[in-house]
Length: 403
Image (cartoon, rainbow, N blue to C red; front, side, top):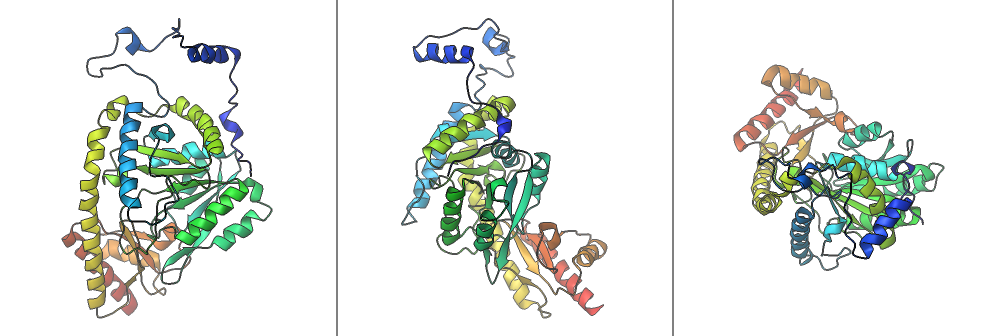
C-alpha cells in the first residue's frame, strides 16, 4: 500500500537554485551567501548565549547523537530480556527529531499525515489531549474502544471493520498509547501484530506514545516498545516530562521507523515542518548528556513511589469493611482507576470530596469511560498524602451510599 501524506506540507521538489546548490555541495564546494542573516556567523552572539547557531531542523546533531546512544543502550538492555526483537536495537540519530514536547510532536505528525477533515484513530478511554490537538489541526479524531474483562484490550475487530468501510480513505494514522492513560494498559503482543499488519495493508501511520512505558506496575508478559517498529511507518514519541518526572523539562523526541522508502519520504516532509518551527534550543542541547544520565535514577525513584503506593492501595481496599471500592488492574503508568458503585454519580463523588475533604479529582467521564463509577487517582503523592486521599475517597463513597 502506498503511504499518502498531507498536501499541506508542500512539494518536496527543489527549485532550480536549490538544485544547483545541492549539486555544488555534492562536489565539495562550500557556498557562502550574500544574505546570511544569522548574527552568530558575524560575531554578534551575546556572551550569555555563546556558540554558533546551526539551525538544524531535527535538533542539534550532538544532542541527537547523545540521545541515540542512550536509546541504543536502553534497547540492548531490554532486548536481552526478550527472545524475539521485531525492532532494531541500534538507533540512528538521523531518524530522531528533538522538540519541546510530545504534544508538539502530535501536532507535527498530524500536519504531516492529514489534510483537514482526515481522521486519526485514538483510544477510548483515553486522555483528551489527542482530540484537542486534532481540533487545532482541523483533523477529526475517531475513537476505538478499549474493553475491560479483568484486563484491558483493544477492539481490533472494530478497527478492521472501519478500515474496510466507507471512511477508510480518510483514516491517516492510529494513536497507540503504550501504556495508555488512565487505563494503564500496554499494547499486547497479539494486538501489536494485528495492528501493524492493518496499518501496512492500508497505508496508515502508527503514532506510538510511550512516555509511560518504563513505569510498569502489574504488567502481563511480552510487552515491548513500538519505537523502532519496522513493519509499518511508525512515529514513537517520548520525552523528559515522564522519564525525568519533570514536566518543566520541555524536551520531547520523535523516533521514525518503518520501511525505508516510507521513512525517507516521511522525513523529507517532516523536515519541512521542523525547519518552519525550529523549536529546539541549542542551550538545552548542551545539557542533554547530563539530563540523560539522570534518567535511570529518576525512573527508579518514581517506580519505587508508584509501586509502594499501589501496594498500599491494595492493602487499604482489602481492609475496608464496606468493600465498595476496587481498583482496575493497572499494568503501567502512574495513575490508576478506582471503581465504585455506579449508583453514585461521579460528579456527586467529586463534589463530596471538594466539600468534605477539600480534595478534587477527575471522574471517569473525563476520559470517556463507557459507564459511570470511576475515579482516576495518582500514585505519585508521598505515602501519607496518598493514604489521606484514598481514605477520603472511601469515606465519601460510604457516605453517598448511606445517603
